[in-house]
Length: 378
Length: 171
Image (tube, helix red, strand yellow):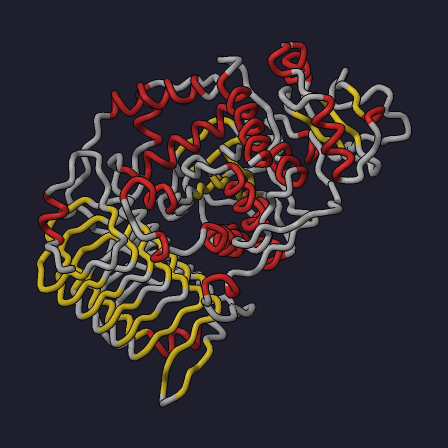
């Protein structure tokens, strides 16, 4: 009960951070959630059974920007930073009192309260002599930590969860014959879905503003991005992709997002990026538990979200290669960015599990988790 | 439970998605001219259904069985299939580009003039299934087996896939 209360407080804090500072870009790392999970012993590694972490190894840190530092001056957000013996930095929410944090520290055999210090600079901790801040540029991404590696976390492969059977590494079959977009691509006889694009645009701009992002996007551009390049009409799926794509742009992941100039390059968008990305593809997993809670759907008829995420991660590396070399396509897999938009997933712990599973899948497939970002991960 | 799929679709309000997941069974229906993008279906059994001019783009199907169904000009683009079974089905002039099939089976199925470009098959089984005049460019295959001559043959490369599943003599 007490543990749940603490988790709730942490979530409240994160939600509060999300809502305030309208118009400013927010930068809070998902590591805060993970740190909370580790601290409060609520991390699940086998998708079902709660694990008992009596002596956790804390390996995640929070690096903050100058902008976020300014917000720390705000009394509503003056979270405390704790450095542990191994140089790990943890942030406590404001509601966790010194006494509480001392208790947590002692429960987990962490350091004495003199390790509790306040952040005074851009990720550098005065008084943290002897602790070398991590200068890995991937941890100092301008729009927040784009990807997390599930270090120290064991994720069971999906075959143990859903009884899908062993999925060994199998051969990949690829063909590079000429693109034939004619067969089975008619679609013109299917009724086009109807949308009030003005309303969709208004709602989206309101939503993006509520999330604290600034976005310059005209109705016309919104309509263009929401148009399925294969059919030339706006549709539900393209609308979802456009909303994620524009939020990614608002967060500074890339600029000038647009639909591919060559239809044969069947990735969601073309982009400009200082990191060399030229194309981006969006994944937006569904929250089955939401359907169970709100539509009375039997969730046992669906795979676990971790299974979905693991397979998603496993497919990402080969998908990056799919359209390379085509006219107007990416030159190499490194030019393709995959963004997993977790906007529909309600539970923060679930989001964290999914992040770990996606990365685990990609790593198992190719030993490479580069070019995978997460959106709405808190 | 045996409902009528047409009436369920007809009762959807504007903006509603088709979301079914309680082991419903639908049989002997013809479903025509519907936009059902981003549907979510789990544990559904479709028997003797004809789907014509249906747009299922971006939908999610789980533990769903399609038995003796006919699909004509159906769009499954960017849809996901998990633990689904297609038995004695025929897909004609259909769009399955970038569809993802996971832990599923096609048995005695036929694809005619359909587009499966850049679709993904993972942990998949084909039995007596054939692709005629269909586009399979850029497909990704992992752990795919084909039942042939009373044994499972693991697909190792595109040529074996082509040899076992694609009918190049049709037009």
